[in-house]
Length: 212
Image (cartoon, rainbow, N blue to C red; front, side, top):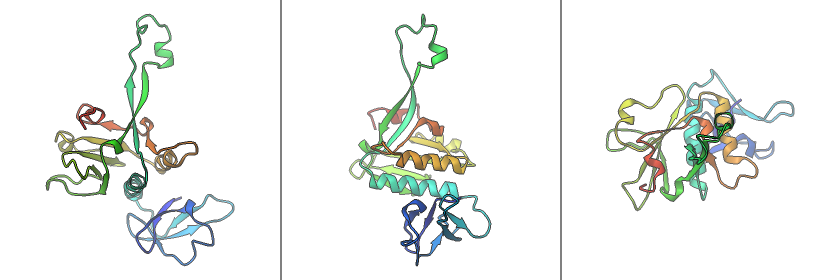
């Protein structure tokens, strides 16, 4: 089941935003391969877009990029989570440290505190083309690459370039839907990508420091 498509005007749309009334008269296509997609709003199965022809291998990768940009552009805050180590004064004596896993905690950073512009596949210094690039309109030195790992991890050349990079591993449609839910879950004030997405931070977590 495919939850996202592009309409005839190139707008990124989600099947959950439509009813049988307002979906009529539009043409939809796959964000990755451009094949026709047809909405399915039945009563038995979960609403989705039907992908005509062969299934698209690049769908998760392309939709993840569009989804991150869409949410970043329309949100006041955009958090990303990472695992941090708690320093407990009783760590050496506490018998529950290993069992409870209390030596780790999820920390969040609001990327909008440091970046105000999001673009997709923008060439940087004629060298790299990150999947998603975060920059700041007044502080040109601020750059953050967000790379989507579906089948190919971030290259060693890019990792060793000194650039600030966050890699999100999304292997399946379930991973993509989980990211969608993290952006739209009830009771969540602001969208976030938490540590459960197997995030990898490069440059010794420099992204997490105030020097950004």
